Amino acid sequence: MASCVCVVRSEQWPLMTFDTTMSDKVKKINEHIRSQTKVSVQDQILLLDSKILKPHRALSSYGIDKENTIHLTLKVVKPSDEELPLSLVESGDEGQRHLLRVRRSSSVAQVKEMIENVTAVPPKKQIVNCNGKRLEDGKIMADYNIKSGSLLFLTAHCIGG
Image 1 (cartoon, rainbow, N blue to C red):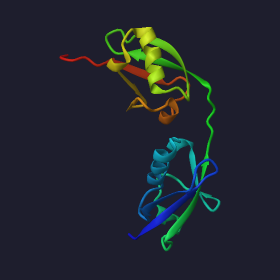
Image 2: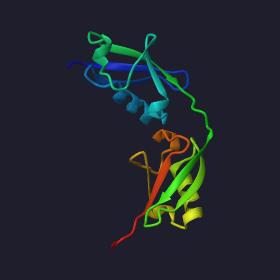
Image 3: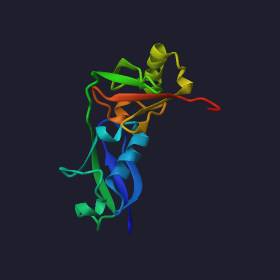
């Protein structure tokens, strides 16, 4: 497919431009925007005129396959920064549970410090998963679409088994 230039404008950031193809999914544009702005994909709304673009669809599915330049508008959904009660489940025979209260804006590093306070497992030895995804340092809880009542699973990294 032919390549084109994607131009994304927003009130919060300078104009963003990058090359794309019509067969690319909208999610690829979302990921590019995330790398430039640190706004998580689920907090982005991309508009073509007044039409909201869906992440799973290809650009060509919006009838814009004859364009050389695509002009999109980025709207950022400001998620509430509510406190989320989460259950931390420790690995092992007991599967001990702890209640953690985190915010959507809490960094994974901050959550790992909370976990250390209740389990004594240092952050560097923690492997924390939620919704089937390993939580990575440098991200925030909102990046994982974590909701109130979600379960965090803790396993401790150990060398030699």
